[in-house]
Length: 166
Image (tube, rainbow, N blue to C red; front, side, top):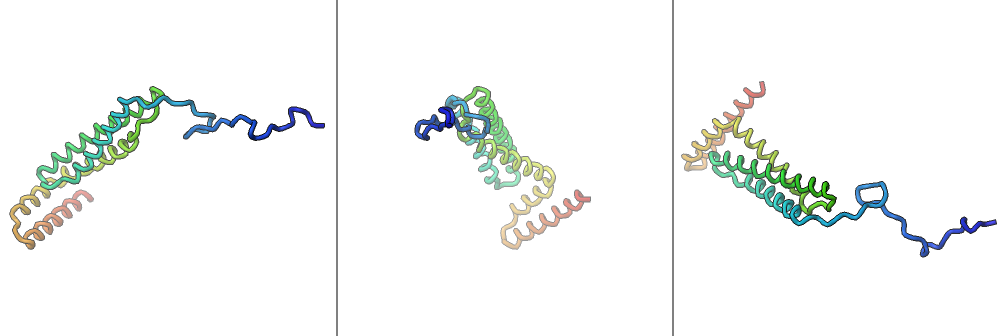
């Protein structure tokens, strides 16, 4: 004989089951407060600085001034990374939502920081060769002279790499 507790209620009368929140498999997600406007502005500023850092790396024209451009791009990328990570941590600590663009700012800031550091190390290792190449190219008026400058750079960098490699 069926008991009243064994009978199931029709689906339209059952309360909806709580769904787990995004990123967690442990019960319903507590509602988060909206993102603080100051943290959102910090995240957008970080994203803008990260993009400026990457664009600055593409604008290296003159080898002698390129060192300064790379150094400034490195500093800008570091500031962007700091702003983005601090916005994310403050939002998490305050229990508010993640600021939009903050994760992208972290990724682009880290890419800008790594790329700038790599290029700056390259400038430091090959500075004599790059300086000589810059001087050579400033006096090269023909295509043949420019090719000779490139060949000279390739030879001197190859020699430097063989010395560094062992």
